[in-house]
Length: 422
Image (cartoon, rainbow, N blue to C red; front, side, top):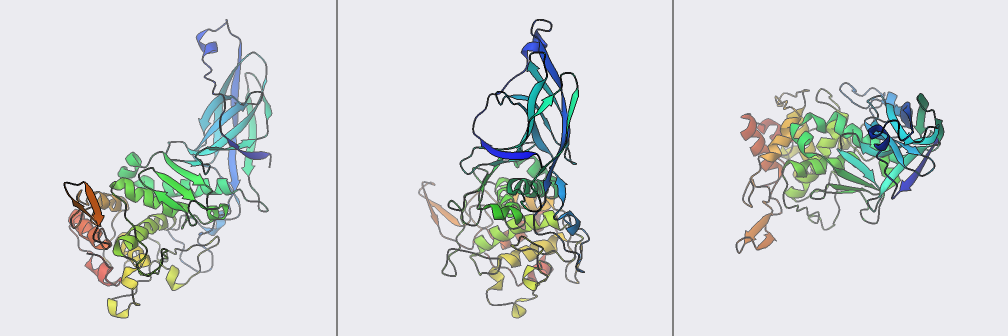
């Protein structure tokens, strides 16, 4: 496929200004490089063609296991002799790019095209596990002075050997393109997020750290599970930057220190995880879809009740033991508030951006409905302790959503097992 990948920790940065400032004194060569960035898409969580509802699904099966465009990525031209950058541009929504390059001298130049998994607008960037730069690069070609050198389609990965970093970038770009960018709050706050790949020692199942805007993806295999890995973790960052706070999540209610979509958790944990999952789900299934599925899989989600976000369990008497504390229950309530496929009790269809604005309405203090409700501040704020593991819950979100819109969501709430919280 004429492409290569390597880690790049340092390189010479060339600001090619001398020749333009002193024309006729310093000889220079220049031209354009064009082409198209592509990758072999191996990500799961697509909407399978097996009779399920794929209306409003943003990732149909036709996009799976085929070459796809690398969208909206920064593109660089490197000079082969010293690895210096001699041009920079971006790919468009179809992967096409045209980059102007400049180099001292008046001869043709050997150069290659690279990209690093950096979003063109600085929304996020792929990093190594230690924070270094990944570089995905083509083989060099002769760049013709005064002309355009077309590299054609540069494809990273194949059906036999998919490229994990290219797939990880696409999952993140899809999350931004099909979900987060529709919020003004995210357009102003979701910036400079680091997605570090890969480090299962630091985080065995992928993690997000809001204050540092850092995501850790555990393994290359997780690059093929966008819904429950990179999209979910970006959902956590989106939650945090909507209203920065102290972060408290305790998963030990069932005696373990882990969680799943169907384990009874403290309400602060089920809300945090359910909200991040909802944000990721929305990137794949917009409001008019009647069968949104959510799962941890490198393939299509199976059509099981535990994967169906639309399968509300009903009132508490018909719910499983502890279901009111599931992250899945939170996800289902949020989906019912968002979707336009209304059941008899579901007359709400709030726009996606409103969920971020609702988070912003949480109070600044430690009291009920506050962003730091799980904590207690004493001695003039010098001592901070945890006193309410069910604080900052989906119940608080519901109150803030209803205060923002003036519309009740009680029907959604009661038909989804009365999610826990205080």
